[in-house]
Length: 440
Image (tube, rainbow, N blue to C red; front, side, top):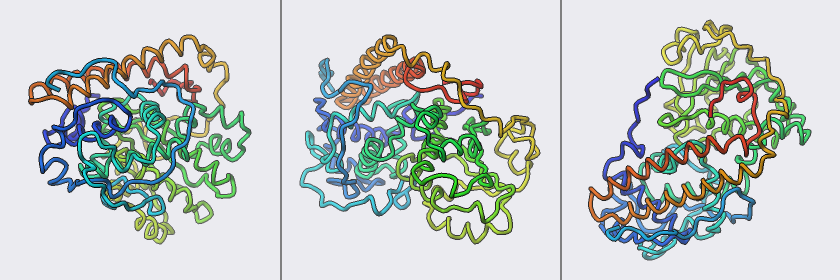
Protein backbone atom coordinates (compact mmCIF):
# COMPACT_ATOMS: atom_id res chain seq x y z
CA UNK A 1 0.00 0.00 0.00
CA UNK A 2 1.42 3.35 -1.06
CA UNK A 3 1.05 5.93 1.72
CA UNK A 4 1.42 9.65 1.05
CA UNK A 5 3.78 11.54 3.36
CA UNK A 6 1.66 13.86 5.49
CA UNK A 7 2.42 17.51 6.16
CA UNK A 8 4.74 18.42 9.01
CA UNK A 9 7.13 15.52 8.46
CA UNK A 10 10.82 15.87 7.64
CA UNK A 11 10.08 15.06 4.00
CA UNK A 12 7.39 17.79 3.67
CA UNK A 13 8.53 20.68 5.87
CA UNK A 14 7.75 24.30 5.17
CA UNK A 15 10.55 26.81 5.71
CA UNK A 16 9.05 27.96 9.02
CA UNK A 17 8.57 24.38 10.25
CA UNK A 18 12.16 23.57 9.34
CA UNK A 19 13.34 26.54 11.41
CA UNK A 20 11.53 25.23 14.51
CA UNK A 21 13.05 21.78 14.00
CA UNK A 22 16.50 23.38 13.78
CA UNK A 23 15.84 25.24 17.02
CA UNK A 24 14.93 22.05 18.90
CA UNK A 25 18.05 20.27 17.65
CA UNK A 26 20.20 23.30 18.53
CA UNK A 27 18.90 23.25 22.10
CA UNK A 28 19.39 19.50 22.42
CA UNK A 29 22.95 19.79 21.11
CA UNK A 30 23.75 22.62 23.50
CA UNK A 31 22.54 20.46 26.37
CA UNK A 32 24.43 17.38 25.18
CA UNK A 33 27.70 19.26 24.70
CA UNK A 34 27.72 19.00 20.91
CA UNK A 35 29.44 22.11 19.57
CA UNK A 36 27.19 23.90 17.06
CA UNK A 37 26.93 27.48 15.87
CA UNK A 38 23.19 28.01 16.20
CA UNK A 39 23.19 31.81 16.19
CA UNK A 40 21.51 31.99 12.77
CA UNK A 41 18.44 29.97 13.82
CA UNK A 42 17.79 32.41 16.66
CA UNK A 43 18.94 35.58 14.88
CA UNK A 44 15.59 36.93 13.71
CA UNK A 45 13.22 38.70 16.06
CA UNK A 46 10.47 36.49 14.65
CA UNK A 47 12.33 33.20 14.97
CA UNK A 48 10.26 31.00 17.27
CA UNK A 49 7.38 33.44 17.34
CA UNK A 50 4.50 34.10 14.96
CA UNK A 51 2.15 31.15 14.89
CA UNK A 52 4.10 29.37 17.60
CA UNK A 53 4.27 32.22 20.08
CA UNK A 54 7.63 30.92 21.27
CA UNK A 55 9.78 33.26 23.32
CA UNK A 56 12.69 33.21 25.70
CA UNK A 57 12.84 30.29 28.10
CA UNK A 58 10.28 27.55 28.47
CA UNK A 59 7.25 28.32 30.55
CA UNK A 60 6.04 24.74 30.45
CA UNK A 61 9.28 23.03 31.37
CA UNK A 62 8.95 19.89 33.47
CA UNK A 63 10.98 19.75 36.66
CA UNK A 64 11.89 16.23 37.60
CA UNK A 65 15.31 14.89 38.49
CA UNK A 66 16.82 12.44 36.07
CA UNK A 67 18.47 9.28 37.25
CA UNK A 68 21.23 7.06 36.03
CA UNK A 69 20.12 4.25 33.82
CA UNK A 70 22.08 1.58 32.01
CA UNK A 71 21.83 2.05 28.25
CA UNK A 72 22.86 0.12 25.21
CA UNK A 73 24.36 3.05 23.37
CA UNK A 74 27.43 5.15 24.07
CA UNK A 75 27.37 8.88 24.70
CA UNK A 76 27.11 11.28 21.79
CA UNK A 77 28.15 14.54 23.37
CA UNK A 78 30.80 15.86 20.99
CA UNK A 79 31.06 15.65 17.23
CA UNK A 80 34.00 13.79 15.79
CA UNK A 81 34.14 15.91 12.63
CA UNK A 82 34.21 19.59 11.79
CA UNK A 83 31.03 21.34 10.76
CA UNK A 84 30.60 22.94 7.37
CA UNK A 85 32.41 26.21 6.86
CA UNK A 86 29.19 27.89 5.95
CA UNK A 87 27.26 26.00 8.54
CA UNK A 88 -2.78 21.25 21.89
CA UNK A 89 -5.02 22.07 23.20
CA UNK A 90 -4.42 21.92 26.56
CA UNK A 91 -2.07 23.67 24.21
CA UNK A 92 -2.68 20.84 21.67
CA UNK A 93 -2.60 17.08 21.89
CA UNK A 94 0.32 16.11 24.04
CA UNK A 95 -0.79 17.91 27.17
CA UNK A 96 0.99 17.06 30.39
CA UNK A 97 -1.06 16.32 33.51
CA UNK A 98 -1.19 19.29 35.86
CA UNK A 99 0.54 17.34 38.62
CA UNK A 100 3.61 17.03 36.38
CA UNK A 101 3.87 20.69 35.40
CA UNK A 102 5.71 23.64 36.82
CA UNK A 103 5.95 27.25 35.80
CA UNK A 104 9.29 28.98 35.41
CA UNK A 105 10.32 32.53 34.77
CA UNK A 106 12.08 32.76 31.43
CA UNK A 107 15.79 33.24 31.92
CA UNK A 108 17.18 36.30 30.17
CA UNK A 109 18.55 35.36 26.77
CA UNK A 110 17.44 31.74 27.13
CA UNK A 111 17.06 31.57 23.39
CA UNK A 112 20.55 32.87 22.75
CA UNK A 113 23.22 30.82 21.02
CA UNK A 114 25.04 28.55 23.48
CA UNK A 115 22.53 28.75 26.34
CA UNK A 116 21.07 25.55 27.80
CA UNK A 117 17.29 25.68 27.58
CA UNK A 118 15.36 26.01 30.82
CA UNK A 119 13.45 22.76 30.14
CA UNK A 120 16.71 20.78 30.10
CA UNK A 121 18.62 22.36 32.98
CA UNK A 122 17.66 19.78 35.61
CA UNK A 123 18.36 16.78 33.36
CA UNK A 124 21.69 14.99 32.99
CA UNK A 125 23.02 15.43 29.44
CA UNK A 126 24.58 11.98 29.04
CA UNK A 127 21.57 9.93 30.04
CA UNK A 128 19.09 12.16 28.19
CA UNK A 129 21.16 11.89 25.01
CA UNK A 130 21.36 8.09 25.37
CA UNK A 131 17.66 7.79 26.09
CA UNK A 132 16.71 9.81 23.02
CA UNK A 133 18.53 7.37 20.72
CA UNK A 134 17.17 4.42 22.73
CA UNK A 135 13.63 5.69 22.14
CA UNK A 136 13.93 5.29 18.38
CA UNK A 137 12.62 2.17 16.70
CA UNK A 138 12.48 2.35 12.92
CA UNK A 139 11.22 5.94 12.99
CA UNK A 140 13.40 8.82 11.80
CA UNK A 141 14.93 11.04 14.53
CA UNK A 142 13.52 14.20 12.93
CA UNK A 143 10.03 12.77 12.62
CA UNK A 144 10.13 11.73 16.27
CA UNK A 145 10.85 15.34 17.28
CA UNK A 146 8.28 16.66 14.83
CA UNK A 147 5.54 14.76 16.67
CA UNK A 148 6.15 17.03 19.65
CA UNK A 149 6.38 20.19 17.54
CA UNK A 150 3.07 19.43 15.83
CA UNK A 151 1.48 18.62 19.18
CA UNK A 152 2.57 22.01 20.53
CA UNK A 153 1.53 23.90 17.38
CA UNK A 154 5.14 24.58 16.39
CA UNK A 155 6.00 26.35 19.63
CA UNK A 156 9.68 25.51 20.06
CA UNK A 157 9.81 26.11 23.81
CA UNK A 158 6.70 24.12 24.64
CA UNK A 159 7.72 21.26 22.36
CA UNK A 160 11.13 21.12 24.01
CA UNK A 161 9.52 21.11 27.45
CA UNK A 162 7.35 18.20 26.38
CA UNK A 163 10.32 16.29 24.94
CA UNK A 164 12.32 16.84 28.14
CA UNK A 165 9.44 15.62 30.29
CA UNK A 166 8.94 12.53 28.12
CA UNK A 167 12.63 11.58 28.12
CA UNK A 168 12.76 11.98 31.90
CA UNK A 169 9.54 9.94 32.29
CA UNK A 170 10.94 7.14 30.12
CA UNK A 171 14.09 7.03 32.26
CA UNK A 172 12.62 7.37 35.73
CA UNK A 173 8.98 6.38 35.76
CA UNK A 174 7.55 4.51 32.78
CA UNK A 175 10.60 2.48 31.66
CA UNK A 176 8.89 1.56 28.34
CA UNK A 177 12.18 0.54 26.71
CA UNK A 178 12.72 -2.14 29.35
CA UNK A 179 9.10 -3.26 29.03
CA UNK A 180 9.19 -3.71 25.26
CA UNK A 181 12.57 -5.43 25.35
CA UNK A 182 11.44 -7.83 28.07
CA UNK A 183 8.18 -8.50 26.23
CA UNK A 184 5.76 -11.20 27.33
CA UNK A 185 8.60 -13.38 28.62
CA UNK A 186 9.45 -10.85 31.34
CA UNK A 187 5.94 -11.13 32.81
CA UNK A 188 6.37 -14.89 33.19
CA UNK A 189 9.95 -14.69 34.41
CA UNK A 190 8.94 -12.15 37.07
CA UNK A 191 5.80 -14.13 37.94
CA UNK A 192 3.56 -11.06 37.57
CA UNK A 193 0.24 -12.86 37.71
CA UNK A 194 -1.98 -9.90 36.81
CA UNK A 195 0.26 -8.93 33.91
CA UNK A 196 0.19 -12.54 32.70
CA UNK A 197 -3.61 -12.67 32.95
CA UNK A 198 -3.90 -9.58 30.73
CA UNK A 199 -1.65 -11.24 28.16
CA UNK A 200 -3.44 -14.59 28.20
CA UNK A 201 -6.88 -13.00 27.95
CA UNK A 202 -5.65 -10.97 24.96
CA UNK A 203 -7.46 -7.88 26.16
CA UNK A 204 -5.64 -5.96 23.43
CA UNK A 205 -4.40 -7.46 20.16
CA UNK A 206 -2.41 -5.93 17.31
CA UNK A 207 -4.16 -7.06 14.16
CA UNK A 208 -4.41 -5.68 10.62
CA UNK A 209 -4.24 -2.16 9.17
CA UNK A 210 -6.76 0.56 8.39
CA UNK A 211 -7.23 2.19 4.98
CA UNK A 212 -4.36 4.59 5.69
CA UNK A 213 -1.93 1.78 6.52
CA UNK A 214 -2.10 2.37 10.26
CA UNK A 215 -1.77 -0.72 12.47
CA UNK A 216 -4.94 -1.56 14.41
CA UNK A 217 -5.11 -2.45 18.09
CA UNK A 218 -8.32 -4.32 18.97
CA UNK A 219 -9.27 -3.80 22.64
CA UNK A 220 -11.96 -5.93 24.30
CA UNK A 221 -13.03 -4.23 27.56
CA UNK A 222 -15.49 -7.02 28.38
CA UNK A 223 -12.47 -9.11 29.42
CA UNK A 224 -11.29 -6.55 31.97
CA UNK A 225 -11.92 -6.57 35.72
CA UNK A 226 -10.01 -4.20 37.99
CA UNK A 227 -9.37 -6.93 40.57
CA UNK A 228 -7.44 -9.06 38.05
CA UNK A 229 -4.22 -7.04 38.33
CA UNK A 230 -2.41 -4.44 40.38
CA UNK A 231 -2.19 -0.87 39.12
CA UNK A 232 1.50 -1.38 38.36
CA UNK A 233 0.75 -4.52 36.32
CA UNK A 234 -1.98 -2.65 34.45
CA UNK A 235 0.44 0.16 33.59
CA UNK A 236 3.06 -2.29 32.33
CA UNK A 237 0.50 -4.00 30.12
CA UNK A 238 -0.68 -0.66 28.71
CA UNK A 239 2.88 0.38 27.89
CA UNK A 240 3.67 -3.00 26.33
CA UNK A 241 0.67 -2.60 24.00
CA UNK A 242 1.62 0.98 23.08
CA UNK A 243 5.25 0.09 22.42
CA UNK A 244 4.30 -3.02 20.46
CA UNK A 245 2.07 -0.83 18.29
CA UNK A 246 5.11 1.38 17.65
CA UNK A 247 6.96 -1.68 16.38
CA UNK A 248 4.38 -1.99 13.58
CA UNK A 249 4.89 1.59 12.37
CA UNK A 250 6.86 2.02 9.15
CA UNK A 251 7.77 5.36 7.60
CA UNK A 252 5.84 7.36 6.53
CA UNK A 253 3.04 5.88 8.70
CA UNK A 254 3.48 7.32 12.20
CA UNK A 255 0.19 6.66 14.00
CA UNK A 256 -1.98 3.71 15.01
CA UNK A 257 -5.72 3.08 15.15
CA UNK A 258 -7.49 1.70 18.22
CA UNK A 259 -10.74 -0.25 18.02
CA UNK A 260 -12.57 -0.49 21.35
CA UNK A 261 -15.04 -3.33 20.84
CA UNK A 262 -17.71 -2.86 23.50
CA UNK A 263 -19.56 -6.05 22.61
CA UNK A 264 -20.71 -7.62 25.88
CA UNK A 265 -19.48 -4.66 27.97
CA UNK A 266 -21.11 -4.19 31.38
CA UNK A 267 -20.57 -1.96 34.41
CA UNK A 268 -18.51 -4.72 36.03
CA UNK A 269 -15.89 -4.10 33.32
CA UNK A 270 -15.69 -0.34 33.87
CA UNK A 271 -12.41 0.85 35.35
CA UNK A 272 -11.48 4.52 35.06
CA UNK A 273 -7.87 4.05 36.20
CA UNK A 274 -6.49 2.47 33.00
CA UNK A 275 -8.55 4.90 30.91
CA UNK A 276 -6.97 7.87 32.69
CA UNK A 277 -3.52 6.32 32.40
CA UNK A 278 -3.86 5.71 28.66
CA UNK A 279 -5.11 9.26 28.08
CA UNK A 280 -2.20 10.63 30.10
CA UNK A 281 0.34 8.54 28.17
CA UNK A 282 -0.97 9.45 24.74
CA UNK A 283 -1.29 13.13 25.48
CA UNK A 284 1.95 13.60 27.43
CA UNK A 285 4.38 11.05 25.99
CA UNK A 286 3.07 9.69 22.66
CA UNK A 287 1.82 12.81 20.85
CA UNK A 288 0.43 12.52 17.35
CA UNK A 289 0.43 8.70 17.61
CA UNK A 290 -3.33 8.21 17.35
CA UNK A 291 -4.98 7.97 13.94
CA UNK A 292 -8.55 7.03 14.86
CA UNK A 293 -10.14 5.60 17.98
CA UNK A 294 -13.30 3.63 17.24
CA UNK A 295 -15.84 3.00 19.97
CA UNK A 296 -17.77 0.07 18.55
CA UNK A 297 -21.20 -1.16 19.62
CA UNK A 298 -21.48 1.05 22.70
CA UNK A 299 -24.29 -0.32 24.92
CA UNK A 300 -27.06 1.78 26.44
CA UNK A 301 -25.08 2.09 29.71
CA UNK A 302 -22.15 3.80 27.99
CA UNK A 303 -23.34 7.44 27.49
CA UNK A 304 -22.94 8.45 31.18
CA UNK A 305 -19.47 6.89 31.19
CA UNK A 306 -18.58 8.74 28.00
CA UNK A 307 -19.76 12.04 29.49
CA UNK A 308 -17.09 11.63 32.18
CA UNK A 309 -14.29 10.42 29.90
CA UNK A 310 -14.71 13.04 27.18
CA UNK A 311 -14.02 15.81 29.71
CA UNK A 312 -10.54 14.35 30.24
CA UNK A 313 -9.66 14.41 26.56
CA UNK A 314 -7.64 16.96 24.69
CA UNK A 315 -9.89 18.33 21.91
CA UNK A 316 -7.52 17.09 19.19
CA UNK A 317 -7.66 13.54 20.59
CA UNK A 318 -11.44 13.80 21.01
CA UNK A 319 -11.77 14.77 17.34
CA UNK A 320 -10.25 11.43 16.33
CA UNK A 321 -12.93 9.36 18.11
CA UNK A 322 -15.56 7.73 15.92
CA UNK A 323 -18.60 5.80 17.15
CA UNK A 324 -19.49 2.77 15.02
CA UNK A 325 -22.31 0.25 15.23
CA UNK A 326 -21.65 -2.40 12.60
CA UNK A 327 -19.19 -3.73 10.04
CA UNK A 328 -20.44 -1.28 7.41
CA UNK A 329 -19.51 1.63 9.67
CA UNK A 330 -16.05 0.19 10.25
CA UNK A 331 -15.56 -0.56 6.56
CA UNK A 332 -15.43 3.19 5.86
CA UNK A 333 -12.07 3.15 7.65
CA UNK A 334 -10.90 -0.48 7.75
CA UNK A 335 -10.71 -3.07 4.93
CA UNK A 336 -13.19 -5.90 5.46
CA UNK A 337 -10.31 -8.39 5.50
CA UNK A 338 -9.08 -6.79 8.73
CA UNK A 339 -12.47 -6.58 10.46
CA UNK A 340 -12.93 -9.62 12.76
CA UNK A 341 -15.43 -12.16 11.47
CA UNK A 342 -17.29 -12.07 14.80
CA UNK A 343 -17.97 -8.39 14.07
CA UNK A 344 -19.18 -9.10 10.54
CA UNK A 345 -15.86 -8.84 8.73
CA UNK A 346 -13.62 -11.34 6.95
CA UNK A 347 -10.75 -11.85 9.42
CA UNK A 348 -11.01 -15.37 10.87
CA UNK A 349 -8.19 -14.85 13.38
CA UNK A 350 -8.78 -16.44 16.79
CA UNK A 351 -8.38 -13.55 19.23
CA UNK A 352 -8.34 -15.97 22.17
CA UNK A 353 -5.36 -17.96 20.90
CA UNK A 354 -2.53 -16.38 22.90
CA UNK A 355 0.32 -18.71 23.78
CA UNK A 356 3.46 -17.78 25.64
CA UNK A 357 6.29 -17.37 23.11
CA UNK A 358 8.84 -20.17 23.27
CA UNK A 359 12.01 -18.99 25.00
CA UNK A 360 14.03 -20.75 22.31
CA UNK A 361 13.00 -17.91 19.96
CA UNK A 362 15.25 -15.60 21.99
CA UNK A 363 18.50 -17.33 21.14
CA UNK A 364 19.89 -14.15 19.55
CA UNK A 365 19.63 -12.31 22.87
CA UNK A 366 22.58 -14.40 24.02
CA UNK A 367 24.72 -13.44 21.02
CA UNK A 368 26.33 -10.39 22.60
CA UNK A 369 29.18 -10.36 20.10
CA UNK A 370 26.87 -9.75 17.14
CA UNK A 371 24.79 -7.30 19.18
CA UNK A 372 27.85 -5.24 20.10
CA UNK A 373 29.01 -5.22 16.49
CA UNK A 374 25.65 -3.85 15.32
CA UNK A 375 25.67 -1.31 18.15
CA UNK A 376 29.09 -0.05 17.09
CA UNK A 377 27.75 0.43 13.59
CA UNK A 378 24.75 2.24 15.10
CA UNK A 379 27.00 4.63 17.01
CA UNK A 380 28.75 5.50 13.77
CA UNK A 381 25.46 6.15 11.96
CA UNK A 382 24.22 8.31 14.84
CA UNK A 383 27.42 10.33 14.74
CA UNK A 384 26.98 10.84 10.99
CA UNK A 385 23.44 12.05 11.67
CA UNK A 386 24.67 14.46 14.35
CA UNK A 387 27.38 15.85 12.09
CA UNK A 388 24.92 16.34 9.24
CA UNK A 389 22.43 17.99 11.58
CA UNK A 390 25.16 20.42 12.73
CA UNK A 391 25.91 21.34 9.13
CA UNK A 392 22.20 21.74 8.45
CA UNK A 393 21.74 24.06 11.45
CA UNK A 394 24.78 26.12 10.41
CA UNK A 395 23.73 26.37 6.75
CA UNK A 396 23.94 29.91 5.36
CA UNK A 397 21.43 29.57 2.52
CA UNK A 398 18.41 27.55 1.41
CA UNK A 399 20.36 25.47 -1.08
CA UNK A 400 22.88 24.33 1.51
CA UNK A 401 20.14 23.66 4.05
CA UNK A 402 18.23 21.53 1.53
CA UNK A 403 21.35 19.51 0.73
CA UNK A 404 21.99 18.68 4.39
CA UNK A 405 18.33 17.92 5.05
CA UNK A 406 18.37 15.38 2.23
CA UNK A 407 21.55 13.91 3.71
CA UNK A 408 19.82 13.62 7.10
CA UNK A 409 16.87 11.78 5.55
CA UNK A 410 19.24 9.35 3.83
CA UNK A 411 21.08 8.69 7.09
CA UNK A 412 17.73 8.26 8.88
CA UNK A 413 16.86 5.45 6.47
CA UNK A 414 20.20 3.83 7.26
CA UNK A 415 19.49 4.19 10.98
CA UNK A 416 16.09 2.52 10.53
CA UNK A 417 17.67 -0.41 8.73
CA UNK A 418 20.26 -0.69 11.49
CA UNK A 419 17.48 -0.93 14.10
CA UNK A 420 15.82 -3.73 12.14
CA UNK A 421 19.11 -5.59 12.20
CA UNK A 422 19.61 -4.89 15.91
CA UNK A 423 16.09 -5.66 17.12
CA UNK A 424 16.29 -9.47 17.62
CA UNK A 425 19.49 -9.03 19.65
CA UNK A 426 17.93 -6.63 22.19
CA UNK A 427 14.19 -7.47 22.27
CA UNK A 428 12.54 -10.70 23.39
CA UNK A 429 10.36 -12.19 20.65
CA UNK A 430 6.67 -11.42 21.06
CA UNK A 431 3.68 -13.44 19.98
CA UNK A 432 3.57 -11.23 16.87
CA UNK A 433 7.12 -12.13 15.91
CA UNK A 434 6.28 -15.80 16.38
CA UNK A 435 3.07 -15.76 14.32
CA UNK A 436 4.68 -13.65 11.62
CA UNK A 437 2.39 -10.60 11.77
CA UNK A 438 5.23 -8.31 12.92
CA UNK A 439 7.92 -7.63 10.35
CA UNK A 440 10.26 -5.07 11.89
